[in-house]
Image (cartoon, rainbow, N blue to C red):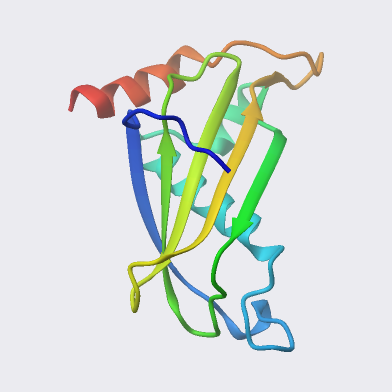
Amino acid sequence: MEFPDKQPIIEYTHRLRSRYGETDRMGYAYYGRYLEYFEVARTEMIRSYGLSYREMEDSGVMLPVIHAELEYKMPITYDEEMRIKVMVYDMPTVRLQTFYEVRTSASDKVHVFGEVSLCFMDRESRKPLRAPESFLQGIQGQLNG
């Protein structure tokens, strides 16, 4: 998995602890859970801009995942605190492309790399559309602030 060869325009870190019900028989965080962890971190990143998925959906704009890729380096075990860093390298247009690094508080090594792309979509027509102006303004406010 390759990340863009430039500085991200946005970086946001969310802390989350792996829970018992999310582990597999080996005691590791189940691999499928990482997409959920990414979603939590991405949602909180958006909330930190004064934006809300719910409000965006209520206004008729959906944001479905169109691509996801993960690369597992090291397992995370039950009750470990994770630092999930979300990075955005380009201003969203029709697509919001997010990249992830998951580390634990106990180690600074990367446990999981990820990339998730989402498409802004009209709820009624189900057709792609450009990122809402309020979304872009929220991001721009973070960049200028």
